[in-house]
Amino acid sequence: MIDCDVHCAPASLETLAPYLSDYWREYTATAGIRLVGMANAYPPGAPTSGEAVPSDYEAVCQRVLETASPRYVVLNCLTICEAHRNPYYQAALASALNDWVRDEFLARDSRLRASMVVSTVDPDDAVAEVERLGDDPRFVQVLLPIRTDAPYGNKRYHRLFAAAAEHDLALGLHAWGRAGHAPTTSGYTLSYLEDYVSNQMIAQTHVVSLVSEGVFDRMPGLRVALMECGFAWLPALLWRFDKDWKGVWREVPWVKERPSAYVRRHVRVTTAPTHLPTDQPAQVRELIDMVGAELLMHASDFPHNHGASASALYELLTETAREDVRDANAATFYRLDRAQGDELQR
Image 1: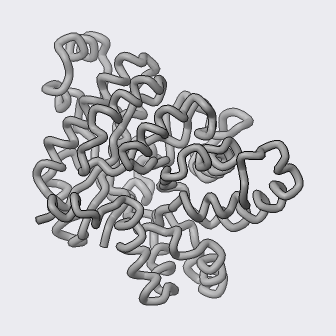
Image 2 (image 1 turned 90 degrees about the vertical axis):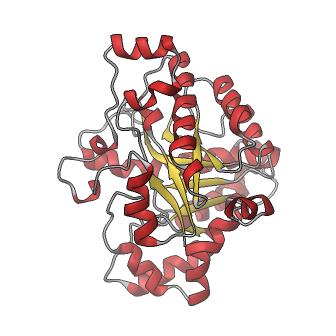
């Protein structure tokens, strides 16, 4: 089994002190900057909050590696989303987080892979971080929050995506992002419920943008994973996307085939949360047929708990499809079985 979404986070900024310059250590200390942590992404006591996010290798080993026995785990650290909009601080924090993940986790277990975090406010800094670490095969994707300043098809991101493609890195678009971003295209929400559900709608915006603005035509090797955004919405979106493209394709002449073809070739989605009913197997089976098991990659979203809907999904898959979702799809997507990865595993 390959788990595509296991979270980790430093316990505090003091943990990152060895990876920050003297200036940034003094800056964060005197400015009173601290890490809030992912626990605050959920209401206190909500079932989805799960346990504390692992902050060291021992916790990941005991709570994930020894418990689930995965073949590989992809670690995703969302701490960069807590950073304010100072581009110099974001760049320094991104490098510190990546070096911490590399030393604390990747160097200690060949089953671990990770997403590389980059500045979310300056594409030049993000490209520089990809160039710095892109040749390390233990980093398998560039992690970006779905709440951002512009849809990801926008030209401002093309340099970053080109750098990722050049280093054969996937893009991981993960739910959430800085609180300063409105979770809807019409502004801020009243409740946490609206805020939480909005992650799916933002993901749809990025899918439409990436295809419509020609990203996959310009970078035919680019691969995109949508993480913690569900996938039940995908068939309806693709049906409407294809239908409207037939009528207005002249506006986007670089979109040379049906939008759904680009999505099925370039985009994958993780299974947590599945957002599926547990008591409607016929409907779930129909949805799986429409989505296609080849688009799904297993993820636990550890340590968060999304209930039993994932189990309902796996029960309805054929044995072959189940193995593909649990392992083969991610192995292909993240190049985990290429010769270089096999050498590290040995």
